[in-house]
Length: 523
Image (cartoon, rainbow, N blue to C red; front, side):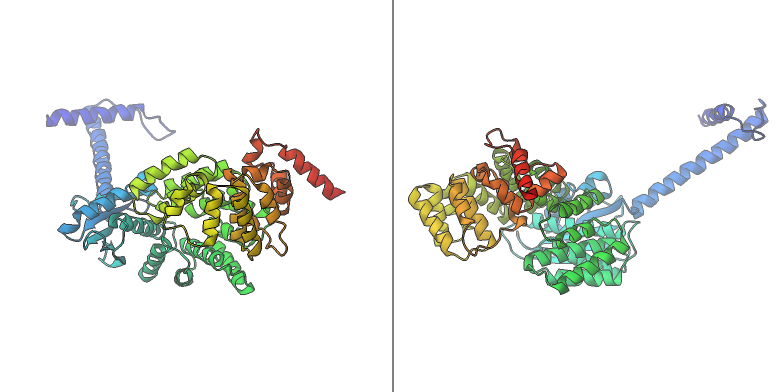
């Protein structure tokens, strides 16, 4: 058998040699002599063996080191009691786009046939408490760790969400195109990434931490991207548009673009700095950010909000759906998608998605809030009243009385309360919606005439295109109101009209009304 195999290789080598095209002065005609055939066969056998060894060594190297772009990551149990937890986290992480695409290879921590680069070690202390540690196999150092205290939310789900954020950021830092960062900077970056999963009202510490990261690694574009996200979030929450805050954000945008001229988050941060109206330059920057990074959850979320703001509800829904695909472990992303569906008049689909999400995240507060919003506007107000998330107070009681019985008496009571209050922008938006959903747009427009009323902010215009605002939009005064907000200018200059203009029940033509209002300006 050995000899037959050898002869077969020799014949194959000769056939390949004979078929190969000859270049000028390079390859002599084949001489069919036994000695020549043996020399040729030995040469080809040597090349074949060498190539085979190279492939084997390359495969072994990949299995051992998992080169950048294909990180080999294991999820291990810290002890026997934690095996079920580790397995649950592994299953959850397998749904991430990076795992689906192959840029991350996930393996069970009990596997011994492959050596991972990075290791998640999960430990359970009871059903709702435990810890998660992220370890570099190269030197055994701990890159990140977190303790999880008692909570109503499933421990595996909480740890999976944190692990997903940390893994995403580790890939950012370890990819070949990333600027080199020290081990200490990497640890700081991963801590900040983990904190951004729960970024709430107190974003200042995360901003400070990421500022240290970018100062230590000024060419690390992923660090700049996260800083700009946290910084703009902090400014929006605090409503701080002071000259000092704006100057700092502007300087950070310039520095970020030095690290990466095409950084999507820089375009988005620049858009957040612009006042509205006009709307066109703001959306142009966020469109640009989306083209620079169509897989950024933050950019897609902001683009979705802006599309809702100008009435492009179908595009808003597409954006929100993409976010859930990019971040499948996030109950918050799913809640945003559910509400975007409801506000795009796809209420049946929103309810179906809510039922599916509640099975996956039975204790998620964000889903409970989404359910309250749907019941409040489109469902049973008694269910909304029974919700612990519904804030108490006379305003709540007057609103629910209005929803359950939109009599003239209840409408007047709610209207007089609104007229007496020094309304905030949020309260004004709530009042407009309340009157519209009970078919009393006359009261909504009367509220807008209140002396000393705060100007309705353009960034809150997304409420105007919800299905319960149909009666408000059906009034011809809506187009004048939209003009004040800068919406007409956007629709006319981009020829991107809102979805509600397609409604055959609308008693006017959007484009014709817009043209009339524009012609009045020229006179």
